[in-house]
Amino acid sequence: MRQRTVGPPSPTATDPDERRLAAVVHIAFFLLLCSSFVRFLTRDQGGARTGWVVALFAVFCLLYVLGHFAAPAPRPGSPPTARHLAWLGSVSAVWVVLLVLAPSATWCAMPLLFAGLHALPPRLSVPLAAILTGLVVISEVRVADGPLNPNMVVAPPAIAAVATAVLVRLQRQAARQRALIDDLVRTRRDLAATERRAGVLAERQRLSTEIHDTLAQGLSSQQMLLQAAERMWRTDPDAARGHVRKAAGITSRSLAEARRFVHDLAPADLAERSLPAALSALAERESGPGLAVEFRLDGAPGPLPERVEAALLRIAQGALANVREHAAATRAALTLTCLDDQVSLDVADNGRGFDVDTASPPQPDGARGHGLPAMRIRARQPGGTLTVESTPGEGTVVSAAIPLALKEAVT
Image (tube, rainbow, N blue to C red):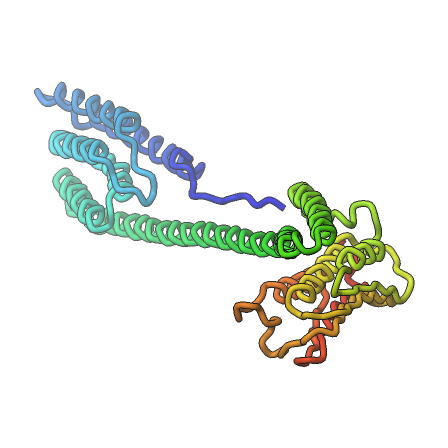
């Protein structure tokens, strides 16, 4: 099953909620700007300042519109650009001048307040909100008629404080959510990389086992036969030629195994024959001067999953390779036992044996072999077990048992 890799959001992606919020702010700005302009025309106009105020209203509106296209607000979590800061400073300066000439523009500060809180970090946006609020209060008090209304002094700071607290909290909550999302993305990426590494290691182990059970064993047999042929070439040419012919036969089988290995890693002996027939052929091939190998079948073999058959055949090949190379045995027996609930394979020899606690038979150079660990892996893959019984001087028995109850799971 293929997994999709989840990465961070695209920088060009736009949150629909952000678009709706920006649209509400823009609509509120133009409504407040229009109402302020109408109030100026109906109540505050007169004198030489009227033309300047109308021009400032137009400049204020034009700057706001241009800022939306030329200096867009930064994405949440991103620092503001120099262009956006320049726009925010210029539009705020125009508003301050407009406020001095026309107090009707007081409530146009709300969109500016939101723009500052949205673009700047709290350490800058909160002082800006306080300055804008103070200017609004001063403007309201300056144009008030009659006794001072306490709401003119209390309401703007209260509204600004609530708006500032809500927006700052939303910004911090969004920052925490982005951090959690980034952690989740990194965790999923690390998990995917770990799974890939585990898969690579498992495949490497499987390939090393395949190579050990096929090509390495074939090459080892060829080497032994050719060395024997070289030693006997002058004294017994017929026997030497026999060793060469046998080495050529092993070469042919190794080539077939290599092709099968490249194709689908299945044993070539199982391509056109059953497991008992493949084991019988293996016993016949391994028999020769100094070693007699026989095959025995106990029970009626039923159809087995290909993975189980391949595992048992590879175990038999690996066990016989150990017998031939390390055991100094004269007889060996392959016994395939088919029961109702399991299938088992026993490979017994009358060789020198070894201490099972060392986990592998003795090697000529004293190193541990790869055969037994590979056979244990082979047995575990379809859900089976492998046991080794050996005593120095009394031979060795390697037994692999695979439960048939797992047949459906491994097919």
